Each structure stands twice: as C-alpha cells, then as structure tokens.
Image 1 (cartoon, one colour):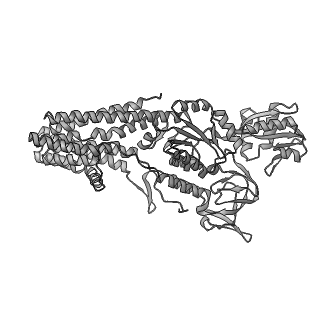
Image 2: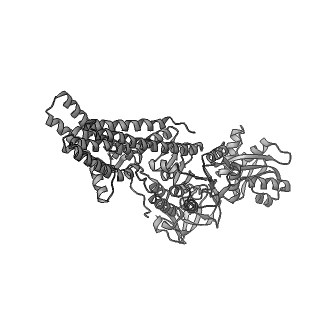
Image 3: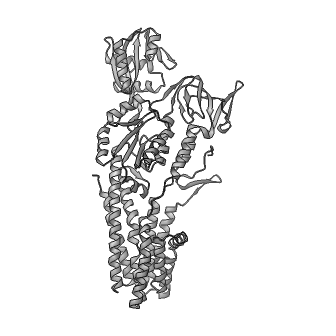
Length: 639
C-alpha cells in the first residue's frame, strides 16, 4: 500500500500541465454513440420512404448504423473465445444473417435496441468509488519527530518505532502509539467509533488518523506506515471490495440454451419452407432484446424511486442481494444515536435549583473546548441562560474544571475531583451517578464553595422513533438484528435495551466489526450493514450490502457502501429492502413476459406471418412493454 496521496480526477476534470482538461465521461460517449446510430437509422428510413436518396445510399446509412454496433460484436467474440453464449453472440448471428439477405434496416433497429439496453445498464452499474483515496487522505503525510531535544518535520514513512512524535491541537495523529506527555481530548470516532472524544493522558493509546482537539501530546510510536490501524482499514476496504462479484446476467444464462434451440428451429424452417427470409425472420424475432432489458430497466425504476427519497443504490447487483437480506447489523454511534454529546439530566442537590446548577456549570465551562463543555453551553443557551465569564479558569488533567467567579470557587468534574477537594458526595448521590452511568451517561458533579449543588448527565442520545423502525424490520422477515459499537459494554447495552435489540457487541475496532459481519455471512445469512463512520467503511464493504447514513455520515463510508442514505431517517433501511423485493418481482415478471413474447413471435415467424422488419418491430414492442412494467416502480410507496 502506498502512503502518498493518489492523483485523481474528480468530476471528470483533470490537471494537465497546470491547466484544466475536461475529460469526457464514458456515459457521455455512450449517449453520443447511441444517438449516432439512431440518427442514421431515422435518416435511412425517412429517405427510403420518401425516395430522396438512391437506395444504395440509403442502404449505406443502415450499414453504417450496423457497423456502429461493434461493441456488441466485440463482446460476442470475447464470449465465444471463453466458450460462453450470451445475448451479444445471439444478436451478432442475427445481424450477419440479416445483412446477408439485405435486411439492413431491420438489422440496424436491433442494434439500436441492444445498445440502448447495454448503455443503460452500464450507466446504472457505474461503481466508480473513491473510498480508498479518501481513506489515504485521512493519513497525515508528515510528522513532528523529537530527537535530541530538537523538533523536525519528516515524511510519515520515515517515522520509526519508539520515535517520539509531537502532535499539536487541531492536528491529526500520524502514528499509532502511547501518550508519554501531555493531556488532550482526542476525537477517535473515525477509528474506534466511540461516540465522544476521549481524554488522553500519559499511558493511553492513540491511533493514526484520530483528531487531536485541545492539548499538545507527545506520543511514543509503536506502529507506523502500513501497520497502523488506519492503514489496516484501507487494506480491509480493498480486500472486501475485491470479493464483490458482479451479478450474473439472467438473460445470458437463458440464452446459453435458447440460442442453439433457435438456430435449430431456423434451420428446420428453412429446410421445410425453402424460405431464407423466413429463417432469418425467426432469428430476428427471437433476439432476446426485451430479455436483455428485463433486469436493467427494472433496476432503473428502483433506483429512480429510491433517488426521490434520498436513497442512492449503486447498481442492480445490490437490488438482487437486498431482496434476499435476512440480517441487519447496525453501527451504534451516528447511526442509532446522534453521535454527539447532549445534556440529558440535571439533578439539583442540597436544596439547589435546576437553573442554578446549569448556570453555575456554564460559568465554569465557558472557556473550555472540551466536547462535554460545549454540550453544557448548548443546553444553557437553549434554556435562555447567559453565563458570565469566569474570573479564573483551570482545567485539571482528566478530572474536570476549577473556576473562580464573584469570589466563589466552582468545581465541575468527576467524583475523584470532589474527593480531592474534600467535597462530600452522599451515598444517595453515588447511587444516582451509578444509575445514570448504567444508562450510558457521563456524569459531571457541580460544586460551589465546597458544597455539592448538583449533577449534569451527558450522553449520546438515541434517535427518535427507532424502536418502531427496528420492530418494522422484523415484519419484513429479517431474522437477526444486531448492534456493533466501539463504545464500552455499559453504554452499548443501554442503547440496545432502549431499542429492543438483543444481539450486541461492544469495544470493537474496525477489523473486529469486519470479523463479526464475516462470521454472520459464513453462517449463511445475507447481511445488511448500516453505518455512518469512517471506521465502518471496512464492515460496509465486507457485508453483502453496505448502507451508509449520509447526513451524519462520512464520504468514505458513503463511497465504501453499496447503498447511500443521504438523510438520517432509519426508515429508509426498511424501505430500501422492501423496494428491492418489489423490483426483483418486476424483474421476474419481465423475464417471463419476454419469454412468452418470444414464443408468440417465433410462432408467427415460423408460419410466415412476419417480415424481417415486422419481426424487429415486434421485438421493440416487447421492449416497450418491459419498460412500462418497470416504470411502475417509480410510483411504489412501500408496503
């Protein structure tokens, strides 16, 4: 794995020689190609009907349109070399036979229909992803290394194990290691999935890619370059994406047996009727055009419907997989919870008032940059409390804050801080703290002039209405619902219990989430993984279907996932599974219809009731019917 950032060309704009160069996308080229074929056929038909041009020029236009069907013929040759029979080979044989008897317009019409279906499918299955590049961009390119009392900035690849690295506030940590000096709140949610930044003191581990928020840290390196947790995440995404196999085309499986049968039928009709045109007509009417569009057009309908609800499904492969889903695994932080600390409880003590506790806490925390302090300030603003500036402010390492205001000393922090300052915490208050911690809260005690006046509980809050959504998933036949989290067991169990989720796993690193998902797959389950964080990217890529929450989600998670939920409505998980099942029903109906339509066409052609051009028109009518049936998916609103 390379640690340097890769050169990429976003949105088809590249930098060449310092100047922007616009790169035409493949989809644009496909549209131009298809338009050229259609225009040639239209001119050929109009000029032929109106006798404007000599017939040999009209035929030349049709032949040019047929020639532009070369992508079909190339695919046919490749499939033949591999010993496979598919729609391209079928079409190529019909084209050769049509040209041989001079039915150029009919042959060109078939080319146009097949190209339209192929390019539409290519557009839908365009799975260009930037997950690996975005993960690489998370890794700092340089590190400040301290040697012999001097600070030097070096390439991160030059950092060695046991080097001391200095990380200043507002910087990303470039290595895995342990803190040897300093104190800071570190946001490592990108790596571990923990809901709130973690206070780091000497002896605590840190990870490359984590964000150092408030203080300077000196870190002794124990993992560098490819061995860091972030580097392993990049490898896991690469490995999981390579395991994803594209959907095997249903039409190609059918034509493996259908083409030889049609060739035999065409030969038999020629032998018994002596009509070469009738034999070629059978080849044209049997071209599985509607069959070739049966799956991609249904996918278009499903993707169009989903797009209106802010759901991006990245291809037909995932529509097919989703309809088989029987297990849904949720990440906790940012998916089931909001992913940010919020004041949930304010408990006055010793005859204090609710507003007084919040006002006092806000004074002490006003100058603090700690995430818990920001949660308290947000709560104060919501309550209409304007806290004055403290006269003096001091943050104590991992324990809390000591402030002065109006001649009074204010403390806010842990039980240890209160005990250190000889402030009594009654047994009943300790029980209250324990109960709140069992619900996943962090409890801050507030004291003024050596007297405890209250407690403030802060925790990551479960999103509204999720219990009903979890229950509704079970009505779809989802057999297992699990929750994975990088948070500790107490916090994880509190969230899971409130949602009625029985299967949970806590204290997980990214690779452990992947192992959990992989184990479920090996047990025979079709697994949907729902997450939002960068740390979820490997598990999203490993799952049969990865769903990324978009609003609170990261670009990496969205790129690594197969389905991106642009909003944070969890109801879209159930809706997407339901929509995929409806779309798969449409696919099956389309395939059955296409087969029946071919049988009717073959019967008419065998009896001589169709000309080659009528055979091509009949095929187009079948295609239109398939499109109409699939377009009904656009109006689907869920079960």
